[in-house]
Image 1 (spheres, one colour):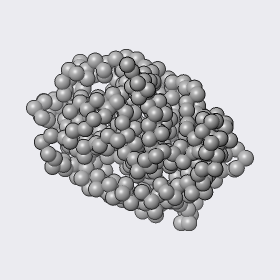
Image 2: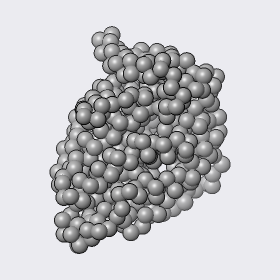
Image 3: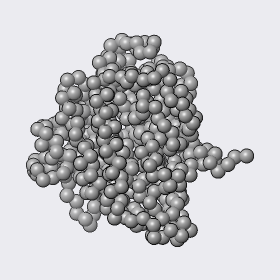
Length: 471
C-alpha cells in the first residue's frame, strides 16, 4: 500500500523530470544515461563527463590544470560577449586580486539593507495577497523581485507607477543574455555574440549612469564597487555575473523549491520546525541543482583519482549527477529537508575553489525570506496549476500558481505579523555568514578538505532530471 508521503515524493520526482524534459529532452536523456557508467565518461565531440562529487570537486579546486578560460569553456564564450574582465572568465592573479576586493561585498550588514530596501515590501505584498485568498504566480513574483534587486544593485530609481513593468523588463534582459547553448557548443557565432552583446550593453547603460553619478550615500552595488577603487570595466565584469547568472539562478530556484515542499508535504513540517529552514534550502538547492552542468577546459594533462584528463579537451562536471551520488546522498531521488549533508559535498551546487559562488549569502537570504512568508501564513499552501519553461539556461517553471487553503485560512485567520517578516530571518544570518566566510577561505586558495574516509550515512533523498545549462 502506498501512503500519502510516497505519493508526494513520486509527484515531486515526476514534476522535476518534466521541468528538465520541457527544457531539453536530449540533455536529460544523456545525463541520466551516463549517470551509472562510472565516475568519468569520455564522450566524443562533447568531452569528459564527470559524475563523481569528489572528482568534480577536485577539478573545480584545481584552476591551474582545469580553467574557465580555455577553449570550449563557458568563460571563453563569456569573453566573446562581455570582454576579458567578467569575473566568471578570469583565472590566476588577476582573478585572485579582484575576488579579494569583493570578500565583504555581501556582508550580513549589507544583507540587512537588502532585506529592508528590496525584500520587505514585495514579501509583505505576497503575504497580503495569499491571505486575501488570491492566486499568486510565484514565477512572476520572482521575476519582479529579481528585477527590483537588479535596480537596487545598479542604483536605478524607478517610478512607482510603472515599477512592475520596469522590474519585469530588467529581469528579461538578464534572461535573454543567459540564453542556453548546446552541449557541443564551444564558441558562439558572430550573430549570437552581436545579439548577446547588445543585451549586455543595454543592462550596462544603467550601470554606467549610476557609476558616473558617484553617490557615496547610495547602497547600490555599483557605488560600493566604486568605493573599493574599481574601474568601470571591473564593475561591469562583477555586475555581469551578479545580474545575469546570480539573479536568474535564484528566480529559477524558488518556484521549484516551493513546489517540492508542497508536493512532498514538507512545507507543513517546516511550519512546525522553522529551525529546519536552512536545511530546507540546502536540500532544495541539492535537488534542483541551479547549475546542472559546470564547464572547464583542461589546461594541462592531469590525473584525478586515477582518471586521466588530456590537455585541450573539455570537462563537463555534471552537478545534476553529482547531487544524486548514492554514497553521499542515500535515496537521492527523495526530497528530505531533514537530510544532513556531509561537509565535503555541501554547497557543491555553488561550485568550489576560486570560483565558489560570490552571492552565496545573498541567495540564501532571498530564498529564506520567501520560505519565511510561507512558513508564517495562516494556513496551508497548495499548487493550483503549473507550466514548465522551454529554452532557458536554468530549468524551471514558466508559471507556478499557489493559493492558501481557504479552510485552514479561516481557522487561523489571526496568525502571523507581516511587519515582522525578515527580522526573524536576519537573526540566522550570523550562522550563514560564518559558514560562507569559512567556505571562501577553504575554496579560495584551492585547498581540499581533510575528511573522514566515509561520509556520514543517513536516510533521505531526492529526484529530478538534466540539462545543457552551464555554470
